[in-house]
Image (tube, rainbow, N blue to C red):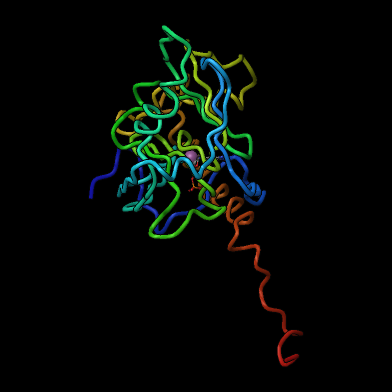
Length: 237
Ligand SMILES: Nc1nc2c(c(=O)[nH]1)N[C@H]1C(S)=C(S)[C@@H](COP(=O)(O)O)O[C@H]1N2
Ligand SMILES: [Mo]
């Protein structure tokens, strides 16, 4: 099986992200996706409403910018294009030309996606992975999945979408921000890893960070929060 340039296959599907050692955010009792920006009136879409849209299944590989790829993941949810056309498009202010969508997770993590990339055929709002509801590690209760782009686009714990009519340029800030600046397209097959720095430079840097980040993320994961059995517990009934 071929992987995009600079990617290496990883066993399974690790938890990864900027939340690092923190556990996944708590899922509200009645989760919604807030729609904000260039709409006539701000509104919230209950996830229960998303569930009334036609279901879509997708098997795809997942590519993190740090260089690991998880292969053959089976997602279930709703096509993002269907969601956009039936929920967002009817609410746009008249004559609006949408250029980008901002996605936000319950942990505050964000991505900005061009409308063209967001409406690509294989982009999903996913609620299930490999036959099970999404767990905290992988984005409960729902996440974006955009397999043609680096993982940082695929916002977990999706809670808000901002409709933009112009590209919002990221603020100028320190080196760390430069190093992790998202690419405006982030297409994996074109190896668009970073928005400012060249691929040859960031590829080895990201790769060096991969193992320590995987370790830190695993420490905050649902699985590792179960304490190991203590000797004292044994024989206590
Ligand atoms: N809400 C949220 N979404 C996120 C992240 C995050 O930290 N928070 N990390 C991104 C990155 S960099 C990657 S590689 C993938 C990892 O998804 P996984 O934890 O399901 O493997 O989620 C992306 N979406
Ligand atoms: Mo990533």
